[in-house]
Amino acid sequence: MSITTLPTRPLGNTGLDLPILSFGASSLGAEFRNVEMSEVFASVHAALELGMNLIDTSPYYGRGMSEVLLGVALKNVPRDQYMLCTKLGRYDVQHFDFSAKRVAESIDVSLHRLGTDHLDIVLCHDIEFVPLAQIIEETIPAVKAAKQAGKVRAIGISGYPMKVFNEVASQTDLDCIMSYNQYTLQNTRLVDDVLPHLKPKGVGVMNAGPFAARLLTNAELPSWHKDSTEVKQAARSAAELCQSRGVDIAKLALQFSCNHPDLATTVSGSANPNNIRKWAEWISEPIDEELLGDVLNVLEPVHNISHTEGLPENN
Image (tube, rainbow, N blue to C red):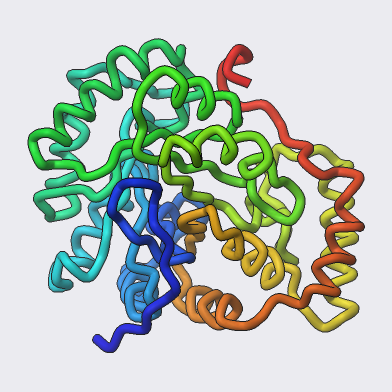
């Protein structure tokens, strides 16, 4: 396999250097549509060939299917050619279990499914749905025990509301975090509200969802999309402006998200290898600064408007 390299950035003080664009494997679990096995393998191999050598998954994606299929797709790939990030604590839409007992089991199950003896990054998944005291007092110490046992290299948390990152990071040591849909053309709260607190502590910051669940694409929005009508209308206007200049808004969105020097990586997923090749091409090209300025002006009235997720006290 001939491998292209992407520019990399350090993930805080972890010693891991991540590609500026990483491969998100949620779609391999058929989270958004049915997928063919051939697409799964072609997507994983395209991502690795193009230098997206951090692969992000979770037991929640496809309720285990994403991890299982990744394990098959990576079977003959040397382990030093990729890094794995998986998660624990969220197992179904309403099923959360962040107990120490489940942490240990979940890590072992993920290792088994992925066919590996260690995970580069393990994140507590969508912690805003549970009281944060449990994450701080029970979950993270249990993941640290797995780290001491050599099963995990870096420990972190993931979620949507910005409050959870600052709160947990102020009360316990984290290696990294992953935030989604909060560093995009429309919403830069990750860099505005969280980065200033985490960067001085050496906590690595990973960004996911550069397209904000299709908001910043020409695709139809999914029925579960939570942004307000006002946000959706502004994004539509921005997409039309891009189109009038012969540019796909998704290209600008991806370039923008991957451009920030303090975000170790941006994670984006697809079970379509053609999308992955297109993304690699896009980020190799310089951003159109004039178009970017005009698009940010269109989105200014809805800048940093997000929605609530999880428990009210965690927002």
